[in-house]
Length: 102
Image 1 (cartoon, rainbow, N blue to C red):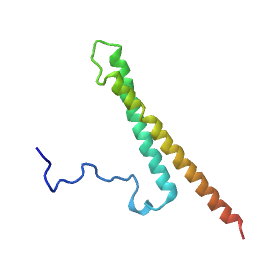
Image 2 (image 1 turned 120 degrees about the horizontal axis):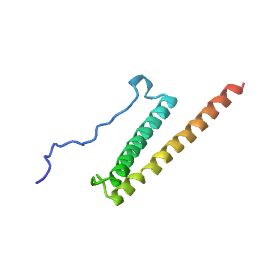
Image 3 (image 1 turned 30 degrees about the vertical axis):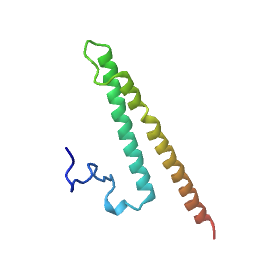
């Protein structure tokens, strides 16, 4: 069975920001932090439920291997925040130094 020829992507672009803030550096940074934080919170909630289920008779939703793979997603999310924060700091420093040059 093959997908229809006109099938589009399953993912739809999404932004936390209204159109008026799409080009605002600080707003884009805040949106990246919010996205990463939302992902980390979702992973933490799944991990917590996994640990609760592991201590009961209930079969956990994920295997330990799948849980490990899920937890490994946190590092790249935190790296994304770190990179975005580093870029934001450099941009702010650059903007601040422009204000002192006359």
